[in-house]
Image (cartoon, rainbow, N blue to C red):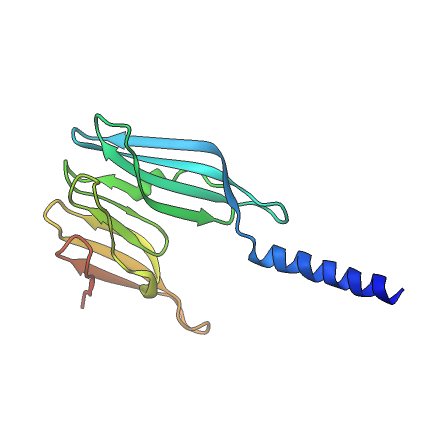
Length: 171
């Protein structure tokens, strides 16, 4: 009887560890959106998350490619706790070289027609509310931070002049 009890506890502990450490895998695609201009294109695909032990979420995979090519390069993968539709309003082609995308906590910009993407490193500033980046590299970012539970959230505006590499708080 003691062996069965110990074995049962071991199996229970193994299941709990697997549940807590298992990350989901990308499953079947369920939504896709594409946009393009004359030099490059963006594609965002939503995939179901496959997990055996708990409710699955979704992955959004963001890719770019030259307009006459099928050589897609992934520049960003998001994970969401729930399956969502592709948030088309978060992806913007500014001109033939500049585009940007943003998540709840970061901004990603290309100024070479989608060949490379750079992160604006805005995670510590709060949740991204809105972004606008211009063809000349200037831009505005609004983030909302709720830093203390007993104080209201604060919306802060930041500006950039280098395609979002550095964001400076507006006074």
